[in-house]
Image 1: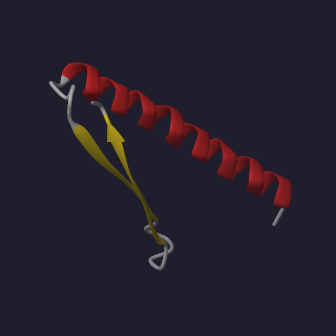
Image 2: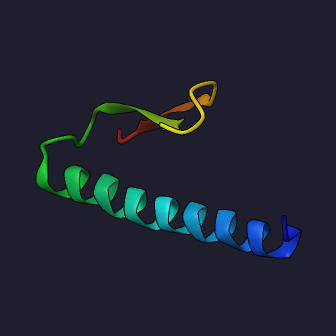
Length: 64
């Protein structure tokens, strides 16, 4: 395995996830009536090829 190539592929994936997720969060906040509310978010990472990969990150964004 080429470590540099692997590292770049993972970084590219994470960048895509981050950029597209931010856009989606911003879109739903703009389109929804969410001002003055709290939004709970969860991002889950899984793989059909690696069933043992089950990783979640949770956070809360306060829009008040």
